[in-house]
Picture (cartoon, rainbow, N blue to C red):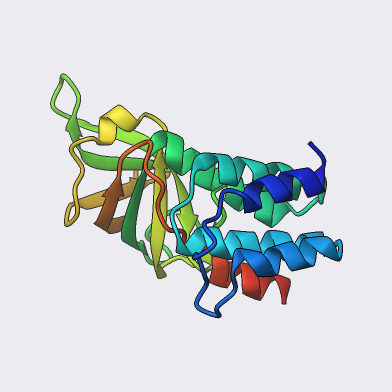
Length: 208
């Protein structure tokens, strides 16, 4: 499908009663589509999806449209939302280790590039901690500085490893043998669950 077909099909998946905090509805999106304002329409659809749970097909259509429009940030977020649906999502408050405590000297990227290891309480046959990998998205921030704090979204590489994780659990982040950060789990969503997003404020600042 071309861009207009993808955006139109995404519109059809949004209930008419759905509205953003600014009272934007899918009718507004149709109006922008009628005037070939495709990027604005895509942005509004993202905002609608971030505020209201929508099916994975919605995000797949937006991801395809964003790629055709060469909107890398939007494409990354939409693909991320698809991954959350397929693999589940853990939302947590993360505090990175302070500068000098690890080898990292640069901020961590906030848009789902990093896939650190996590100690989530599992043990190997020898009794040592067994880490599991999960991708990391920082909500509403493009990067997170060493020692910084933020709410993050984690997508497990192997969802079965994370089935025991629950709200209130403390988990530890590693990039090497040193502790890269510590987090407290706020929310756990299993695979196949459509959840609200946490990116749109980041979008707005990036595109300003």
